[in-house]
Amino acid sequence: MEFIADMMLGRLARWLRLYGYDTLYGVEDDDEILRMAGAEGRVILTRDATLAERARRLGIGVVLLESNSFEEQVEELRHFGVEFKELFPANARCPKCNGLIRHASKEEVKGKVPPSVYERYGEFYVCTDCGQIYWPGRQWREMVKIDRKLRGGE
Ligand SMILES: [Zn+2]
Image 1 (cartoon, rainbow, N blue to C red):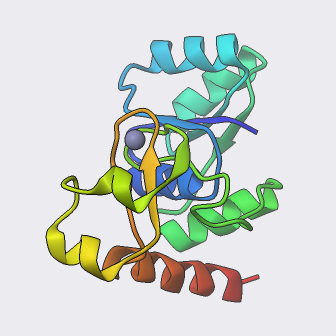
Image 2: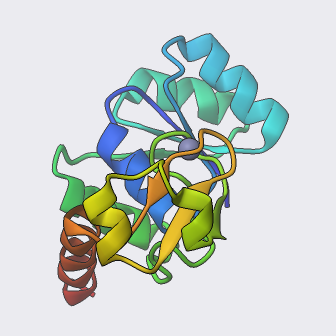
């Protein structure tokens, strides 16, 4: 399942990427969202009933999310059949740009991460599109915590 999320769903879009779902985000124009979803077979995620109705009329897959809360939106997607199983970095996409993440060697990231990070960590990943480097630091631990919370809701 691939998605295109409207501008109100930034946090949800980032998390879908972290769970490995190809998710476009950042397209502001509804016509463009409909066009891309139709052309690429993406399911539209939106909080906008008008956009959802337009998508349905065009036969495009759409989930109209009712909640403003990220945790509840995850629940709504679960009801739709979306699984939140394999968290970053396995099969994950870059939360910033939707690019694919791959493992990076320690040598490869030398000089590209702060020296303290380079010294302390041995595990690195890099986005094949934007080049963002990831390691199991504070942000990563926060992510794992939220993942546990989301799964606890299952
Ligand atoms: Zn990226």
